[in-house]
Image (tube, rainbow, N blue to C red; front, top):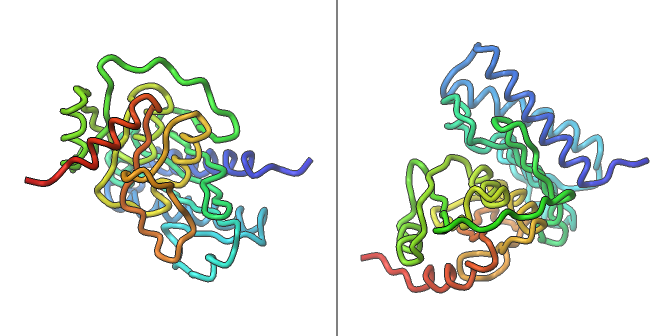
Length: 247
């Protein structure tokens, strides 16, 4: 039986995570050099396998030279071989591998491997959401929390939770460890396509910070902001984000 898009995404994200885990365990590199070696090794495998399995589809990878001819394709694989290079290089667990398929610009299939936790979350097998945290927990960058997110958290009475990679933060909402991930500090399509697909399949709210849909396989892959949260918090988070103005 042919491998489905969901199965392919899960297999490749998990395999890339294993390559990265093994590379770090060998101890030949550390810090930035480890991150660079990990990016290259995981990307090489993902490109090889995707081209073999889906030769007619387009690919957008953080680690490949972009070719905007991909925009002519209805199906585009969007991958980040190592999301959270800094965290990976520091020996932390809050990093991820993203493998996603956008169809007609919609994040349709996604797999996010969290090798540090030993799990791969996918759009093909969503788990039931855990009850909301009381008070709600809101994720922010551990190195540069966005002022908008801090403002929204304070207004909602939410507890701030600092974490590394975008994929790790989005999956913390899927796993029930947090409730709201509001990001306004700039990202690219590979940072959030797989997380968006997994989160939407799990029944979470997924949008831009102005409430419009996330659209993928655009000529310019810059996709600066997003909101992934439990649906019961979406309207308030969007309203407060719109109200925010820098002092």
